[in-house]
Amino acid sequence: MKQHKNYIERNDLKGASHLEVSVYYTKGGANYFCGGTIQRGYYVSVTPVTKKGGTISFELFAGCKRFLFAANRYTDKQFQRAIEMAKDYEDELIAVAVAENKAA
Image 1 (cartoon, rainbow, N blue to C red):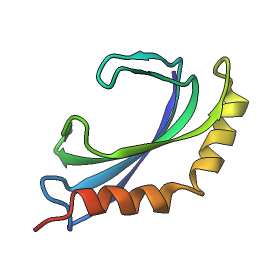
Image 2 (cartoon, helix red, strand yellow):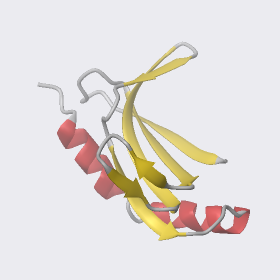
Image 3 (cartoon, rainbow, N blue to C red):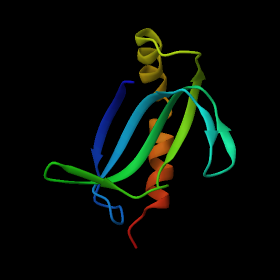
Image 4 (cartoon, helix red, strand yellow):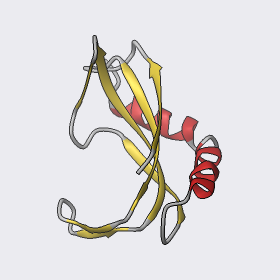
């Protein structure tokens, strides 16, 4: 499936140089890490990453995500709607990700 990614350079994060803002669709299902289920639909996430040369590295379980809306299947029209909706939540998620990964 498609993902819409945007990178924001930051110098106030510990162990990361950028924030990756991503909008994506997931089929959902069982989540074996926390013992629940993930709802099928569109999400926006913000993850601290380090970009060096042509590689991107990240820490597992870092960052945060927000459910945008439920969808039974992926469509380009809904994906564009999710990208537009994500703009309303980006600042909130960026603030949470920065607070969790603030350099000491």
